[in-house]
Length: 265
Image (cartoon, rainbow, N blue to C red):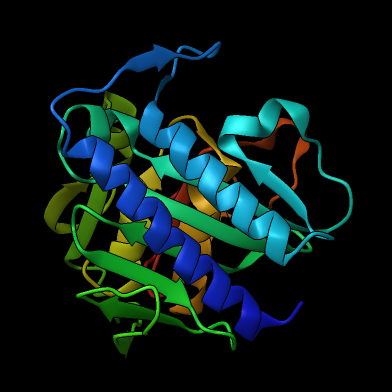
């Protein structure tokens, strides 16, 4: 895999998909359908998926592609694949809350090693460079030209007062019970894979997820956090969260800066 080519392609496709999503987001109305798993899907999900899939297949025809909207037809063969959530945070999108993201990642030997997370309504974009380190690019964004890029790094966390980020749409008592095991300085809520990115930039120390997610929900954010020095581990035994699992379902997990003293389940 030519990582320089990969990053250029996924950055461009994320921006193009973001433009398509925002056209629909800013329209007066859009249809919402319900998938077989009872999750919502919109025209924005489908349009972004079609755009990204076509672009990745044209650029990397020999690499397996897994996307949320086409997942029923996929099973992982081999240890390298591209994985896409064209619109993570569909509920945020439907409720016009802005915390939705475009996510594209490369998984190698079970680990998301490169990825991009773009939040078009928030004007924030995070991605790994060819060397695997992570940056935030600040807008205005251009498909043709890369803007100002700033390296990002996780916080040197102080366990006597942690900043925690949790889900807007999936917060529950089990999450609160786990968070209460820590000494918390402050908390913030965010939607979609932005939570990984807030840990990656040092804006938060800890993001626990005690709830259902799929690999396409987490891979790009995981790659960005990893490239910023962070970690994502299973909730039950604190072993690394791995990808390429049958059915693509994740266990509960914890994303954090490495200085955080993780508590047991």
